[in-house]
Image (tube, rainbow, N blue to C red; front, side, top):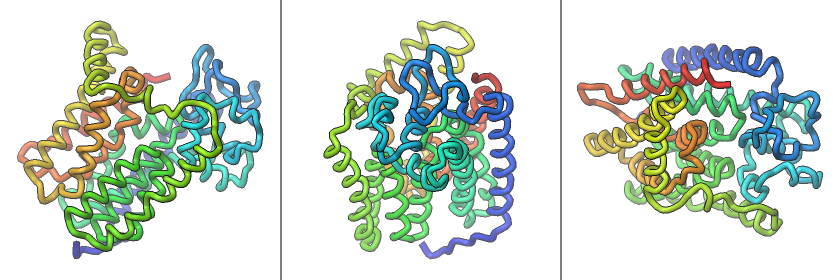
Length: 380
């Protein structure tokens, strides 16, 4: 495409400043009110698994009788990304699986210069900055469309954004890199597209599917320079996964538990919602799950009706749909999981163009904002 990226447009600057203020406010809200000024609260550390040897049990926030959450695993790796302490492996539930997603903990370790006191703060800062940068990158994406320049702020409505911030996982970093790859692709920056998607795959290995989506899109659109660069973009993740295999780390790969037969997990989720009745938590589950499905359907409708605008998003939509169809109740069982794992689906509809009389995208993302407010207010 012929248009150029402009980094100093007023809309880009204003959106970024609004996001900065909002993210700082929510982060401080979590830190002071939700986690009682204890930074480890951001990582949902449970009492079931062994703690990282770099954590002092008397100085951290522990959720009694809970297994903990993925953020605890990332934090353990960030303390010791080179696995120098044998106790680090004991603190991981599935080392072979957890160690695949190395970029976020390794980046945190490097930026904190290996200081174990600073690492949790740096990890939270990385996630907070990722939200701001997502708004900035999406603002660059829409800058050529004056009527849409405010839409990047809809990023702040996405529930997964605040869920990930509160749980200390890597999904915001991977989403930032994926969105950056899409924007670079849209503005014909083949080298930066390849670098962004290569780093995204080191953050979350399942994004190799999105690398494939970019490659197929490039072939479809006959972008020879982009194809050339994408042909090496998968190699860093491949060699990293190969090195993990050679390390022979204990634990399963995680794929079998997270995915199963097509539609089984979705049907089980609907059945669970119906069986659990009209309780507050179950109604919230139903709200967010039905919202996610509606967003999937809406993206398909928009991409079919406005094909010219969405050619570079169509393979992404297809691959995420396939992932969703095969997803098991391990992920679909709890809104914290599927809202986080499929957060990129919200970003796909955000990046889509809705030229219909009824602004479906704005309506759905506004409804997402209701879910975000409920999470911020009620989750503990």
